Length: 135
Image (cartoon, rainbow, N blue to C red; front, side, top):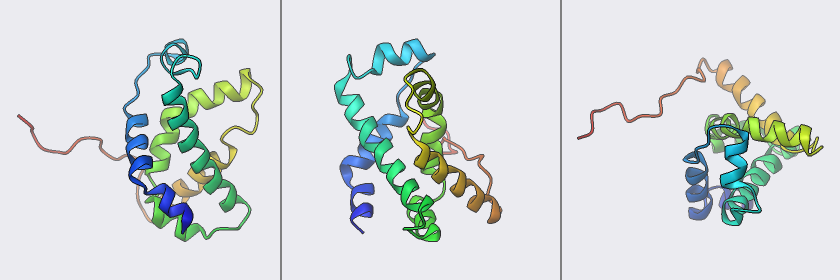
């Protein structure tokens, strides 16, 4: 339950939403705006969230945490949404910086959550708008 406390803390939720609102055009733009050498605060938030997701995925991969529990805690979509946003960055860092293990647990977690969503008949196509006209 300590993991859930961290996962759903006000700080983690605030940081996760902030991470989703990050915008960049390409890899150089990402590094100009968010590299640890220019934006330490963003790096700390990113590292915390990525490490949290990677830890959950690693526990799942090793069979130390129940897959159904993880699915219900994460909703099967939020971590996938984050993964899709940062996958190009992580893949670049795996290759260029030779960080082959970076995010491996998180990637495993995402793939398992996608399988579980599909088994339940849900798609990965959710909407990111409220569905109403705002004035």
